[in-house]
Length: 375
Image 1: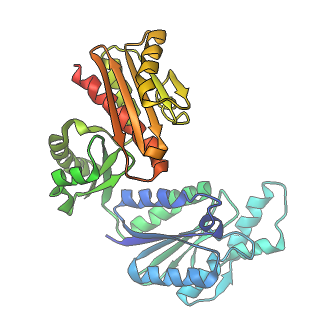
Image 2: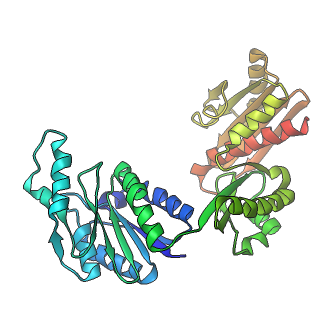
Image 3: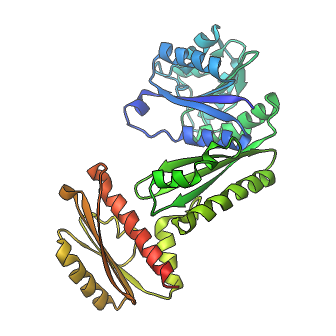
């Protein structure tokens, strides 16, 4: 299978002014086609730096995809950079200029002279129409490489990628495999503990298995490369079964499943009603659990009392309370169920800004597991 690299172009991305969503979309698309993505990078609007990055990518990968820098202004450098990387000049394409004129005329305007820049492409490049925007795209081919330049506007990029680029790549590189991903979500164990239990799975070559730690949640990624989706599903199912057998109830969901939904579903299965209180969380728990009251400075000793009062007032079966103390890097959790009252204090060694989210996730998992124990 061919390998690929993605180069996102734009100083505004480097400065944090806009968020790059194109890389994620392209990466997922390539994954689904069975293409191995080795690198992604962002380069500012500098012709020579972009050209150097493209040349380096061409040496490492067969497919190089750029996004951005195809507009009509002098700080849109992609066309010239790709031409330098390929060792050719730019040339004007009348048919691409016609496309620019036609698109602009839809808005009742005439194109300005500087918009002619968009009709220049590296000599010999394959012009790619852009029916949803004013920036024509192009593909520079070498014996080994395809350098594909797409617009930075996400809806334009996505349309052209799926309408024109995917068919091109499938034909040129005889792509007849897919890569399918399954993500298992775990809570209640750290990344190192999970690694100890599934380390042998992480050494597999196909499917591949990897871990990604979040605040209070660890993801297990299973990626299978196969001829078709059915074959990939079979490969993934085998690894998933092994992971579930080893990790048991610590796996709370997969793919788009969320921890708060898993916790609330377990409460609902018992036929329980739920209320909650939080302190020092700025509404973080309230955004995940309905009927959550927010306090600003509950002491650990006051948490259970406030939770009892909230439960009595709402006539709920279950009440969950979470209070965080940033200076102490600690959180206090309290839980009342029909089976009794529990408190739990946790300390956190990570950055203080992550303590609230970590505490909420651990509290939600505590609620989930306690509800399951009541079956």
